[in-house]
Image 1 (tube, rainbow, N blue to C red):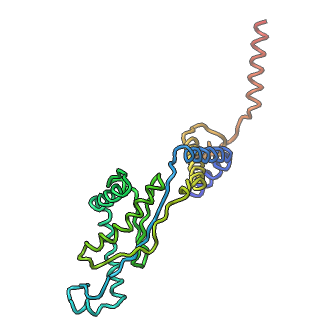
Image 2: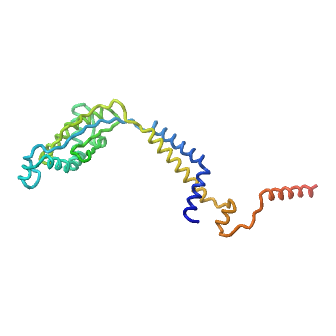
Image 3: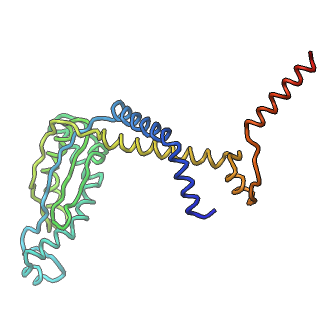
Length: 254
């Protein structure tokens, strides 16, 4: 059997069992919705956006002091963009996050750890710009805001002391306290559950057909043994013969 015939056979099989596929898909969507409702924690986010820039042209941009003095705004911006990845890695260090935690604990009387700070923040550079955005996501709106607000002060301070202060940062979008939780994504997760259920059902149907070794008809018999079928015995004849045999046995017993 060629590939096209196999594909056609599988599609035909799935079409015949479409009710099972739809049923599994609905069950998958329901289970995804139940899981999302009962086992997904609400989260709150606060974000702050920074602009990295070279403060003045007197600071060294290359091995040549003369080149630094003649640097254009474009070259300074390019340098800031080039250095962003380095600074982002600095913001991920345990030392920096412990400093942030200490400052928050001192101001708010909390007991945050460096691990909590590090695990709650996501840093993303804005493509083709010298800007980067830090998003803080936790299960507490106050905690998210406190961390983001502290980063407004800690990030510029860290950049001033790192790399001889060649690149600075300014806050372009301040942190705001979240008033509502992030969406639980019911529609997306239910759609995923629907698709997963349908795929599992299709896999089950195909696997069951492959493992079924019974002969289901003339075509199946010819396909399996590669010989033509000359004739078949109808089922009703078998039933009639069996009935006659039973009646005959009853007559002999009498």
